[in-house]
Image 1 (cartoon, helix red, strand yellow):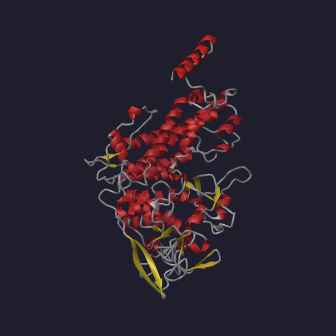
Image 2: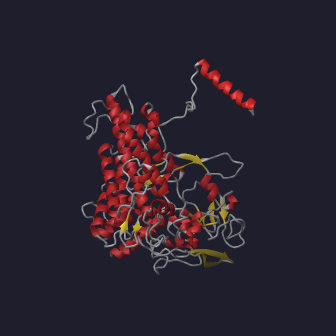
Image 3: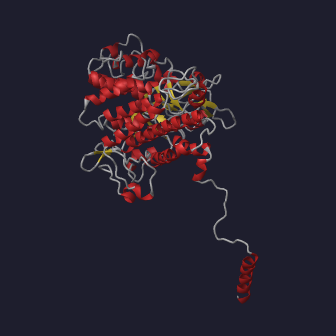
Length: 579
């Protein structure tokens, strides 16, 4: 031990005598720190781009198994657990609190430094335009993330007061995460404020122009404008996208779950916002098939102009894969058959003549349940006897691998998913071929249907207010495009707001199925959440309908999602009633 001590003393003495600097401070390990943002614009922009990666619609959630539209054969699926009564503040697959708040904090940090970054130091005009566009994107993204937080986590407190979200407008220190939730109205206003501020910065649309547009009077050089606001900025959030999210928010605020007094002016506000974005003359004739090859090709990068058809407002970059097909094709086609549409959804499709199958005028034949149905049924759902990929798919009892409950990856309802999938994809493990797919943030059909809903509640089925088209006009266009026989006699028979409301909700269910709307639509409508998921057992030519799963929700409080229990525990955030 004495020899070891002597050795250590000797080494230290050598350093002291030699005059070498010796410190216990860690050496620079070449890792980036926040200081880098002041020298590297790409690194600085990463703060904003991180928020983009946290948009909840960056992929389809495939959460329909948590609704009456589908079940899943994946018996450890988190949405399946929700339906079994396991949805709690501790277990919430629909939790967006963490990611959305994280995105807000990234944006707040970016706004702190945006004016100090050398975006284009040798060109002050371009540099100023970058600050303008990126500021607009930041406020827009903060509003978008707050919208999703509000949709998923707002609700009444124990006293019945409608409560919203915490509103953070600055980058927080650790002690500030206990900021109480604002009221619902204050939260809504904070999102409107973000969107309105974004609109002062952003162009309505991106794209190369020949002259500087109105609202950009500070720009002297069209080259500078196109450099920052031109084609290269396509698919980033624009003024038009901001207006669409404002309208989405207005529809949420007007909905029964939050508009408890049924204030008609809220419906009018939503309808007015939506009408500003819509032109019934540009209703895309193939928009409901946006996921197929022809529609994807029409919206892909061609000749560098990146223009979409009339259906797409905002989407992810088009990507190539076969993951959805591998997950959802029937087993005979090398799929896992995960998402199984319910009989509930199948029954929601009318006959081709437009009448519901429950109407005596429909001509529905229970022994031939798929004959002469709304063409969307065959476009969105694989049913028994359908030919798909040149193969006949039989889903009945003892019908082979695709049959009802035949094996672990077979259907549990008698149906398979077809919508969003590419028939020309090949999940065969021996294949190396992928196909292009599209993930939509917002498409125009959603906005048309939202307008129909708001306009009907505000003015009834046939009044167009000052907008030139009514709720009934929109539904007529949707059903005509779907292939409903014209004239649409059933639609013509709808004259009351109540009957039109039912039809609009049903058309929204059909047109937007499997795009992650149904779960929150049921809640904002305060509809019955406990409808059991049904299927069909086809045996010896007979169709017998049965309950596949019960829905173990509580209608008295589960129209609103919970605040994460960890936030309640750590920061004293007030929980929604019932959770």
